[in-house]
Length: 384
Ligand SMILES: Cc1ncc(COP(=O)(O)O)c(C=O)c1O
Image 1 (cartoon, helix red, strand yellow):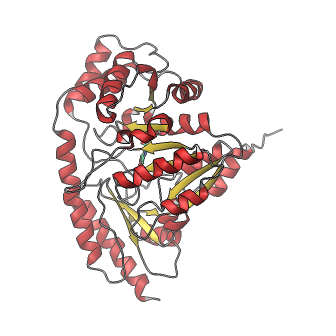
Image 2 (cartoon, helix red, strand yellow):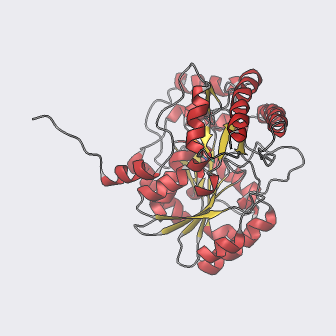
Image 3 (cartoon, helix red, strand yellow):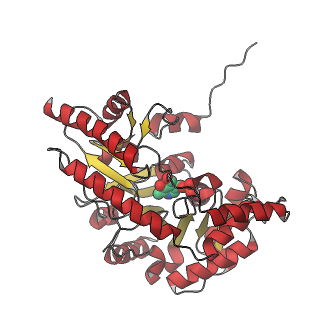
């Protein structure tokens, strides 16, 4: 008898709710879809990997992460937060993704509620659903900052709020005042705050970035998730980390150990070099992203009917269009024009009516892709 495989209910549920794409755009497309920098990983980091392999870093690593790497991370975290951070408070993870997964699966029970200010990175909702939790989407204010009154209204009996700053997909950097007020709400309602700061090194001129680590009132309820992927153009290396209160990190470590096992030993040696060796690479990449951000903003401004709040950080632009078509339909139409973008609705209900483009793609392709997309958005705008 041939077997008919039915995926678990969890997978069925995820497939029904999630709009995260299951496939990557083909080579015939200009991709403004994925958040993968077009820069090569800086040479000294790749060399460190080769050196680590040659030195025999080919065995199982410590389950919570290479002790030396955790020590260096704890030191850096203490510097930013101005508070002590023990090595037991750091878990090295299989990219930021696994850090998010370990945290959410460690903290969210069946039926527990997670507040997601949105539009926001779509993995948070998927992981909450996987854990059997419920998502409370709270739309951002018109300026795409946190609607703190609405978060407060949603807070009673919730478990956690997940924020992303600089925000993927909006490019907004939350202010210190916003984070302070969020801390007050969190204390009042005993919430965990998960702050994903994957793009903290990609903040454009004149904007002051405040890490949630700097907010003392969050100290005992903050889970901080970070990744080497974006800062050092290391998306394929799969290394990130979680830092937080020891009890949360211990629980997250259990999940990560069960799902991922110990991380690649040699990669962690190279990550230590990325972290500790002085380099101006992140700044150089940031300058280029800013030039690309300016190109995108200028191009969008030239098309009537489109709206874009100039991104303050990260490498995404969330473009609001006017059309009877849904965001998903616009993404399909864009694909027919040979340009891959992401549907705003993937990032929460309030993303409907927008598409997200990535400017981690080189200038030439970026301009060509934007021309195709804007031509389409202009055309569908005038069909109304
Ligand atoms: C906001 C945010 N967090 C986390 C990640 C995950 O990155 P990685 O798993 O490569 O570390 C991404 C990737 O796009 C992201 O945009």
